[in-house]
Every structure is written in C-alpha cells, then in structure tokens.
Length: 330
Image (cartoon, rainbow, N blue to C red; front, side, top):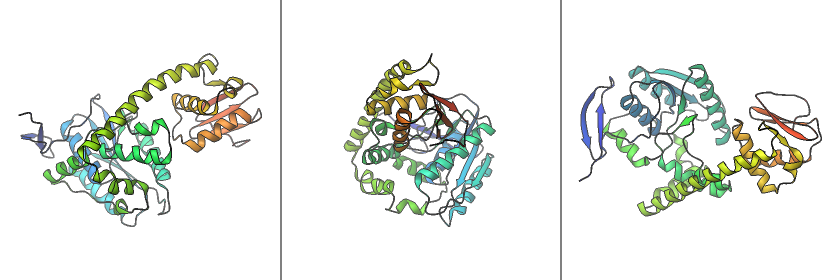
C-alpha cells in the first residue's frame, strides 16, 4: 500500500524517527538554493507549521523570522511573544515591527504595509526570497473572492509562487496543517478576527470552502490550474504584443499606438508593461485611471504609481522606476 513518510525532529534538527500516513510530515514545495530566506510568521498555525517544517526539513538555510504587528487587534502583542519564543527556541534570528494601523484599516492596506516591510528585510539580509504560509485552502478562497470582486482572468490563479515570494504550502490542505501542528505539539495563536464575518474572506472560508467535499475541492483546484496555464500562455503572447508599442524594447510606450487599442486590451497591455518593469501593488481602479490618463492627459504631466512614475510627452509615456515628483501628479 502506498504511503507517505516524514520526520519527527527535535529543535536541534536531528532526525529521530520516521512515521507514516502523513504523521509528522508536511509536503513542502521547496526546491531552492541554500541561503538566507525571510519567513513571514504571524503566530497562527499556518506560519508556525511552515517555520517548523522548513527549519527541520531544510536545516542548512539561514531563516530570518519576520513578524508584523499591524496594530489592528488589542491582543496582537501576544502573537509577537509566541513567534519570538519559537524563533529563540530554535536559534533563529527574529525581526519585528509594529505598524499601529488601527482597527479600521483595510486588508489591502495592511497587506501593502506588511509586504513593504518584508521586502525591506529581504534587502537588509540579502535574502534569496520571502517565504509565506499560504496553503491550498487559501488558493481556493482567493479564487472565489476574486470572482466576486470581478478581478478578471488573473484572479482565478493569483495566489502562486514567484521569484520574490515563495509559498511552499500551496499544495497542502488546512486540515493537514492542523494535523501536523497537533502531532508535533506546536503552539500557535488563533486570530480573533478570523471568525469576523464582516470580512469577505472569512465568509468564503467558513460558509463555502469549509463545506466543500473532496470532489468539489478537486474541481476548484482543476479550474485554478487550468487558469494558471492559460494565463501563462496569454501573458507570454501579450509580452510580445506589447513590444510593438515600445521604443526599442525600452519602457517607453507610443501613446498614439496605445490610444488606438480597445480599452480592455489597453488594460492588459498596461498591466503587462508595469509588471514586466517591476511595478507592484497593481489593482483594477489604478489600471483604469492610468489607461485613461495615458490616452488623454496633456504632455508634461506625470502619473505617480507605487514605486514608479510615468512621464508623459506628446508621443510617449515613459516608465521611470523609484522616482517621485511633486508637480503635475495624478
């Protein structure tokens, strides 16, 4: 009978015994060079399991444990204490920041602030990548959320591993994560806001994904996989198409050519152009505003984006990375 195997390892990373039937083992998708990695650890079960599994299955890496206290919950300092203790007990470096965002902060704002901190840490420690604990249930939840929000084709497969952000648990169901944590007697914190139905993700999690049987779960994952394959092919073709409107393969867009494109195509072109040039935190409203601005604004204007500015001339729109201007900014 086929079986999976895993390790039960103490905090000194010594393999003590092998167990079967998924006990003490989580199947990490992690095939990366040895080096320094930033691990985002909230103190919840997902990130605690990720940290434990990585530290013991891949002990030759240097892991920097990064915790962000968003300042949204009154008891969030207790999360930090759990993460810090886990890091110290396993001889791992601990980094921490407190943002004091307040309980009216949106999920999008909290996420943007968190990833800004993590990226700065990655630069500070010259890390290969950032590692997060998103898992299979998150993949399905995100698909449903993006469908509701109308994010388009990319929303069906938006949660994935990238060169900058590695997500080794994407193939692991939440139930397996809980099993691993309990079998290894790990300690974690439950975020009280995870049961707050005012958040769309929690509604999807508790009222949709939690009730899915194995068959429906498999169908959802199949749709996500197909969308990812299709998107990759379309994006490759789109990258080639965008070059038609660029000046000698530089990030300088021909405004007349761009203005001649249908609006939906213009959105795709701009998204591809921005992502290919390292612009992050792109959302639909920003894309809509920027497309209109490039097509209609007068020469001399600039469009300020996250980490970039687009400078408009009569004939072109040039993307300049990491430069800011205070004049004529949209």
